[in-house]
Length: 158
Image (cartoon, helix red, strand yellow):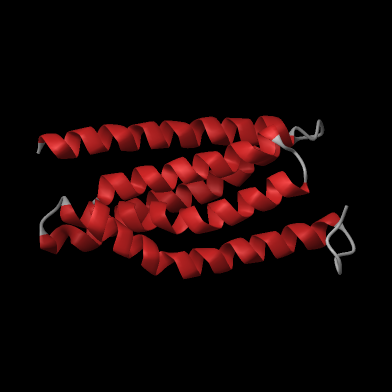
């Protein structure tokens, strides 16, 4: 079943991706505030956990609902991952090294945004293996959330 006004799956996917981008913009300031209140490790772990939930949904429910929920939750969470990582990187170095730390983190995010879709395309391939691709992505995102939990423990020791 297609939403009213959309003629094909590409239109629906494009609308969902656009909506995800708008949510990322709207949630940016909220994640910044949350990161200031909770701490960098906690907000990063929360954002990664939400990203995991959003990414596992299309695996469990490969339907319009599963993909729509994925885009909405990920749109709300993705800015939190970036915001928390950047803020944490600037707090771990001397003030004069902050621009370098931000650049370093940004390069890794950019590399992930380049490599991720490429690998996803290979995984999907001719077999149309979307569930496998989302499953691999969910597993990697869960690893990120678990590493975030380790950061919480380490930050409590400091």
